[in-house]
Length: 123
Length: 391
Image (tube, rainbow over all chains, first blue to last red; front, side, top):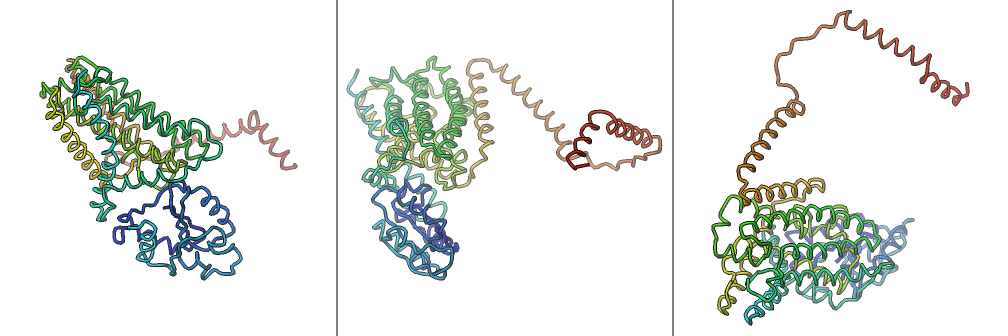
């Protein structure tokens, strides 16, 4: 599982950090954050995709080995949320790479994130 | 040579290969529990390996044979070392080749293959990881050799099987202060060689702090599975070697089947215990700065040298050397304390500067300034500066 911040306000990052902390402990369901997209099965994308991050996000997607799953975390990643139509925003995550799973919320609660991850790991 | 010996090698390789991911899982589980988390269970590394083997291998553009062969070399060398090291039985068909230097060289071969692969990817972090790994390896290999050489002196051989069987028959050899020194040195080396805290953090996500992880960032799918298995095998074998050298009880020196079975069970128990203790210690440790790693390993090396000196019957020389080190250390501390902490707080008498002090000083400074401005080299500099300024 590799986390890609495509232009988020870091609200979702705090919640992802919480999901992997001792309280929600997503690791007990077999999900682990890794250091490289090449090690990852899942890309956890947060935030509206900014112009600068569109190409890196595309490259990260290419670098992940198949089968790969893209999870859009937060309202911004799903439909640009608060930042829709802003000058630096290239679009939602689905406009850049195919999205398999969406976690709505601004920001989504750790419970929602863990729930989505459990659907991916199947535990 | 003998049937039980062959069976011992086969069982040892099988047990270590099957148990290595479980050991990694056990260590992660111990950490998770101590950190107040539930943890993924000790079978998680096996599930990860199975999943990685089914994934698509992505080969980074521009990589060559070094990148592609490194996972195989790593696992192959680790497996050969597993077969050679006397973990369960000292009487095996290959125990005649279980030379210390061969074992250390095989481990180094795996390290070098991975470092070359890190360079081959051409990424900044791959090269950085490779250079760091080589720095650590250059300090680890001599210490590893030195600490086991210290054990080989009483055995009179560098053959690991002879060392272990000698210790089984004469446990008094280990229960000495010098045995403790060698054990500490070997433990530090094991931690460094397998990339655990405090030398390297195996679960870091920050590329700048990585050593081992930085070299394997580009691997994916089955290659990554092999790399992870190789790293887990090396950890298991080195912990097994540590257990075999310092707690050799249970390792069979005969040809009995029951003794072999007992030896395998004890091997699993000893390695699991060592791994748990290591993982529990890691919870309380932070990664040390990279520049402190040589100090840690040099300290380990010194322990091993002192240990070898005692074992070689040069106890008086080592004692003199250690006393001298103590004297030097005390002197250094005494002198540097004044530099670091300042002079002792005494009521200092105020110094009065009369005209006889500052007049010659001022005159000298004025003379220097006058000479410097009128004659070379300052005159040329000032002229050049003036021409730049346009005057």
